[in-house]
Image 1 (cartoon, rainbow, N blue to C red):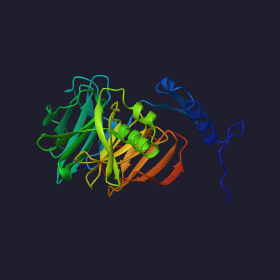
Image 2 (image 1 turned 90 degrees about the horizontal axis):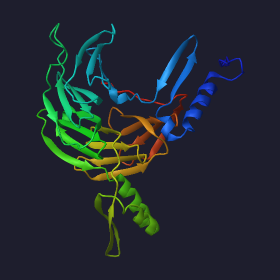
Image 3 (image 1 turned 30 degrees about the vertical axis):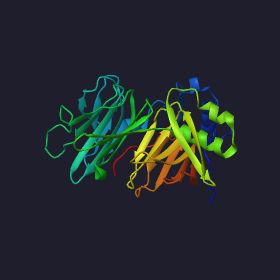
Length: 330
């Protein structure tokens, strides 16, 4: 039996109408895209899509049926019951707006990590065992320092006792989850690696010169041929870290929207793979085994990439709307 498509009075399908609306948004200048609010008429109701809302501002704890949210004007982190929709708790410990959060559990323990524009992260213990008690204590377990600009993204791996955070200052910082100890900082040099690799492959002096005018210097060595090595002292403007995640195989995958670059690092900070993507990414998550990165963004495509090389492997479902992802703990 053929499928009947819903059509409007003009004869176009709803999908075509949605894609037409989004094409107007996509073709708008970048400065206008950030503030575009598009209203879709769905039956008798209206649905407003705000491009400022990020999946990093939400986290779901399914066994307790709690949703943690941030990004509120009063610098708070709020806990809401899924079934009733009632606000259970609102905590204000950060000195600026909370930009990201993540939840994790391990052997009965549960943690919440919040990152803020005040350049700090806070580690909270989630306690849902005591009836009538608030899920979060009034003070965090640890306060994590090290970033020089707003914290933009955070992920947790309790099996490795690891908290990984990214910032607008272009750095990725690793801390211990349980004691809050600083481990190391990783600088996102993906732009340098991409530019130098092109220059070494093409012999272009313009590419070398294009990375020689900013304040962060890095020495990048090329491959050796016939016993001789090629090295270039180059510099790069550090890109803001927009999103990151940690795999079970101890890889850190980071995305910078400044230059549309994905990068895979080891825990020691070594670059494993760097790839430019032809779109702005709004959602990133790992498969259950941690070997596949799933992304969605402005092209309305869900793309599968291997974590080790970041090459596109599969492209599925063409969506009518931009993909904003989810941040939940299953």
